[in-house]
Length: 411
Image 1 (cartoon, rainbow, N blue to C red):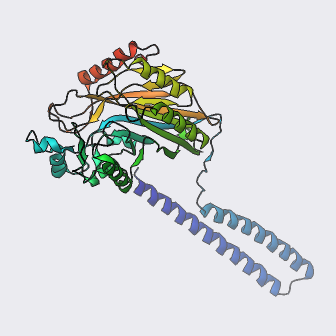
Image 2 (cartoon, rainbow, N blue to C red):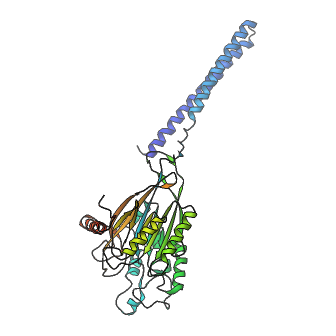
Image 3 (cartoon, rainbow, N blue to C red):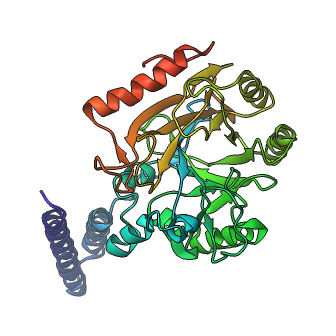
């Protein structure tokens, strides 16, 4: 039965109850009129007293019945949500993807080695195009972050002399927003592709698009509305405070200290969950360097609930350390390179459960295998992988995890 039919039936039932109430009131009025008429005929005192008593009884009975009918006409109140018992816990789901490269390297165009493929897709299909195949995943979680490796700026003269250096139009930040990406880390090897001016422009243009940003000395704090761990109950849940830290190993000899200071700051601010995202490199594409592993462990030991690596451009393994996870490399997620080195990517999701204000160990996670293109030739459209492609991506992740001391295995 559709909503319209239900509303019609409910309205008809209410009209019938209203008519019944009106008939009850009219009957009571008639009885009272008869009684009063008899009294006016001058019956004996005893008779009048009996009639008056009878009238009072009838009046009381009819009044009570009328009140019952009136109450029946009132709509039933909606069940109110009760506060979630702390012992049952609340949950939030966070998603993470790797490098997002919008725009292109101007030098490539100047050398005549290619055009702005990203701009071509934007002009032909609009801002919704790039993330349309993964948007439903991002909108189904509580917050999604990516690593932005593009400068959103009009600066061209200050370009550093290395390749590639991604420059994107200032309004390209809207692509992230409409695609379901809520925030980005700007701490990576492309931060200053167009010098400090390009970096400042990028922050301002992200703000204009409503996309959160963090990295280096800047942290991101968000209050997220959780949902009850028991989905069958109607309960009210309070907000969960989540903090994000972003660092880049080559930008600062003391990036480890920066991360640790920011973790402490967020904890002091009351963050219940702290995420550290790190852009780093690795000599072995299959395994992070030992010093990277040690630093990731240190971040966990000092209060991080999850460590996410952004580089290298290829997927690496996942480790469980002290009941918390370290994703060593998410790889590239969006690129408009005409011949990308690697097409495989992933979305990493983790659902945290908080009980009595404490994050529970070994939070549920999900690996969503992806490709950076929906076609064999790169079309700048990240897409969940299927069948053999999905299995290849998962095999890569689990094979790389197996060579880590606490590497995860297929669930």
